[in-house]
Length: 57
Image 1: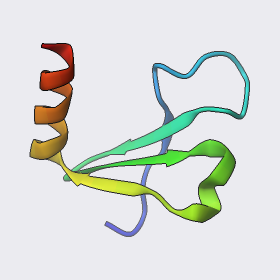
Image 2 (image 1 turned 90 degrees about the horizontal axis):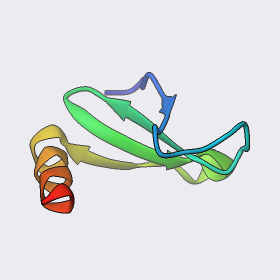
Image 3 (image 1 turned 30 degrees about the horizontal axis):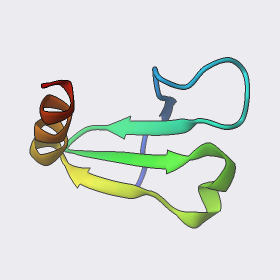
Image 4 (image 1 turned 135 degrees about the horizontal axis):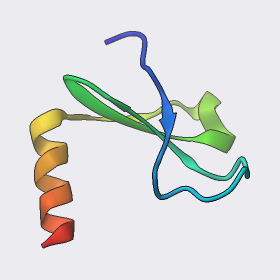
């Protein structure tokens, strides 16, 4: 997946540039808005869903 449709995480607050952006699809990608040039972390969708379920549990 070369191009991502990034959006601000629902946990990021206000209009500040200090937030996390997320892109969801076959994989889930995360990046720091202030350091986009450093790249992103990418996880298979199933692993990301298991992580979120564990955090909520």
